[in-house]
Image (cartoon, rainbow, N blue to C red; front, side):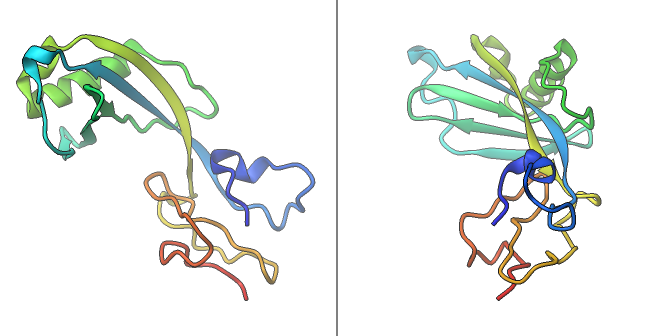
Amino acid sequence: MLAAGSLSGRLTGVPDDVLPPVRPVKGQVLRLTVPERHAPFLSRTVRAVVRGSHVYLVPRENGELVVGATSEELGWDTTVTAGGVYELLRDAHELVPGITELPLTETRAGLRPGSPTTRRCSVRPPCRGCCWPPGTTATACSSPRSPAMPWRMP
């Protein structure tokens, strides 16, 4: 199984014809702290599309609120940008106006795998016994028997 995320297409020692056609897709994420006086701020995960961009807010039991995520085609760049932070806070504010009063505790940027079409990887692995997790920016698989993994060769 090749499951190295956005690095899956760059693994050394693996024949080129076996490597999945994935590329890195940058995602910026914020962590905010919900002070006791505002708790509970959210009781469940919120997912929405605001101004054409996906945004999610995930409350954590430890009092944090995760806001994500941008989706940027910038190669291997993992720089957190003011624009990314602004867009996430702006869009989250549209859903939950009080969010802009919360302390910003962390900003991060990471890379997730994207397939050539941003949909599930539609190219079968070229070897028997090989399997690829779906190469999408929004899906991961947890096991070779996962229904999310369409290409597992017997």
